[in-house]
Figure 1 (cartoon, rainbow, N blue to C red):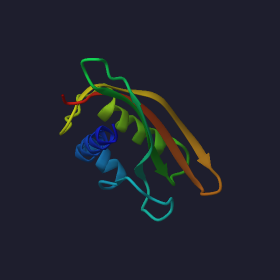
Figure 2: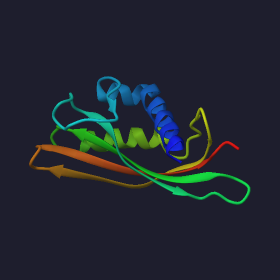
Figure 3: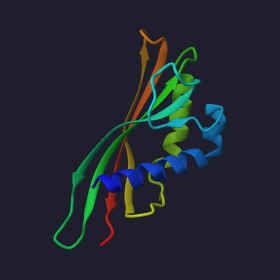
Length: 137
């Protein structure tokens, strides 16, 4: 299942970095797997938590994946974070992403929120997606 999660992350990364409107809004392809807030130029998107669940049947392998993307913004107010989140949603929600191994069956945004982090003086948006992936036989 872990290999399928890595393949999905690659597909998500490819889709996000290929989206011209998102890359323009971020000021470049600022989509990261690992970061420490404050060490990267703002705004940017980072991968967060990933949870994997087996949903294989007796005849087919598959997994359900819940993954989180974070949007980081130092702009005044929530508008920039919300605009970036909408671009991410449009790029991923119910879109047919190509994977090198496995077949994406479904991708849906399940949850989104924006919070002010007073300690870091920034806004952080969180978006949780649910993906169903069939594994190759």
